[in-house]
Length: 435
Image 1 (cartoon, one colour):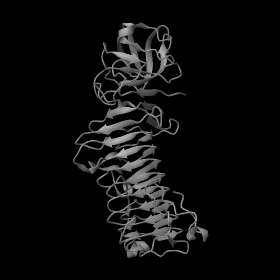
Image 2 (image 1 turned 60 degrees about the horizontal axis):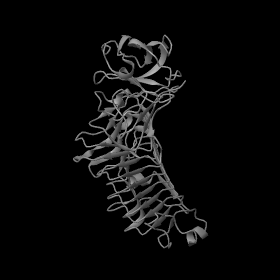
Image 3 (image 1 turned 90 degrees about the vertical axis):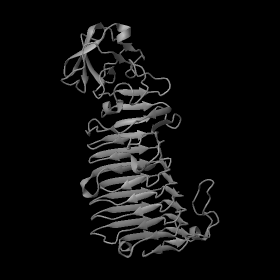
Image 4 (image 1 turned 90 degrees about the horizontal axis):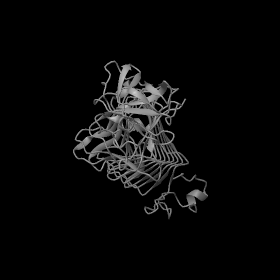
């Protein structure tokens, strides 16, 4: 079973008479065929005459665009051809057209490359379905206001995939100048993988709002993305609920998050959050972790630096939550700490593992409340050049060590924050952090 790929090019695409790629890139439209469309059933789009669609794929991977009213579905996956492809009188589609239909003289298109995400009489984002792939060529793509991305979840259909047309070469930028954030929101189940996308806020006055918000049942993955708040947005992503009312899974991998006036990643609900191989810098706080009941968070192999207050803030915990902070590098925590904890009423069965990290600068490497310190286990961390001390209210283990004297402990140019492999620490058997 194949699924459509919806292609976009902000510079050379077209919103009129343009669907998605087909086998020979032939573009069929109402103009080229002389036929308009209407709907005669909830899953059928009917042409006003006979149309030759010979080059359209018949493996369910092609789609038709219909230029009808805003806020109605206008991108449809073609499932079958009435009368055959060469003498087609109608196409059966999904999702359903809907009982209201869209009239008897609408324009349409199959093939080609689309241009904008929100501007041609209807918002494409609301049309995207599970299993589809959306590719964006390099360029700027405006999101004006908040777009719902409630795709649902079906294990057989996998995720909606939104990605650069050439990851690492083409850099598509989804941006907003709106006074209203988030750009993307979901209050229902949503499943999406974003790859090679830049998210930018280019407005002002949204210091308390996030660019992306998610709800119960959300499964989002951000792979090789770049998120920039430009000091105008409060955060990159956060859930729309708090405490134990949220079930979600979020992964941020090999991405860069910068320029947020509050915190780029906030973990509050009963969710599983993974942050892996990222660079998180020049924000107010680097990350806020306050899981709900049964929540978990895994933070590994990241670089946290030049965040104004704390690199990681551990807020109020709920019972049965588990946090792993492993093999990260923390540098220049600003006026605060590399890891700062706030909770004074820690509930049952909380565990925080802080293992094999590099901590440099900041008031403390790890600054815990007296209550929270009892729930933190550390080992094989390297501490250096803190204003006050390596830790407060935390019992360090034999593998933890001071490393401030290592000659290449800090190099802001590379950046390579790994302790020198010829240091006394490494010679004595202490493991080298992986970043």
